[in-house]
Length: 184
View (tube, rainbow, N blue to C red):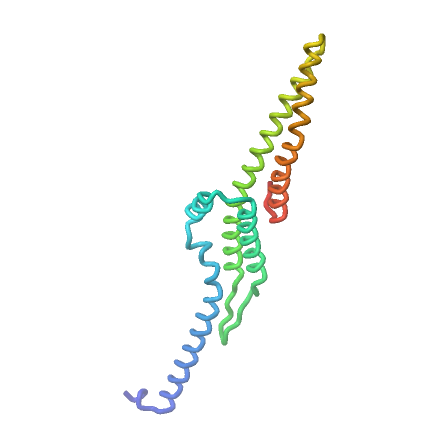
């Protein structure tokens, strides 16, 4: 009772309560700036990835996703290591590390399928080259063998433009993976 009736103490308690409340509001406002990244740890990566794949995405869609996660990694890297609010010093290093790891995990998931797509297309092309090389490496002994070789060469000429259309997306896939700093 005696402390509560002392006006000086009551004023100090009110001032202290106001200060604590204003620091609390400032801290909450600062924490809200990180909410834009909360999907990285609140969303289920597998579910979101499966939803993405279900849309049968093009290379451009994969590029947008990789770009999104790459920009998140860069933005998080720019966070100040310490944020001072009144008498508090908030260290952001652990948060930065965790958010960058989460963004890298999401990026790696999207890049994995892209890499598998490129690898599959490249394997198909290599199989065609092996089969054609095997057919061309046979000995030519008579006119029928010459006709066979000529037919194979004609097939190669017709598939030449097809090979270019196969190689362009493969090249694009690996250029994307390199551009977005994904190890292949």
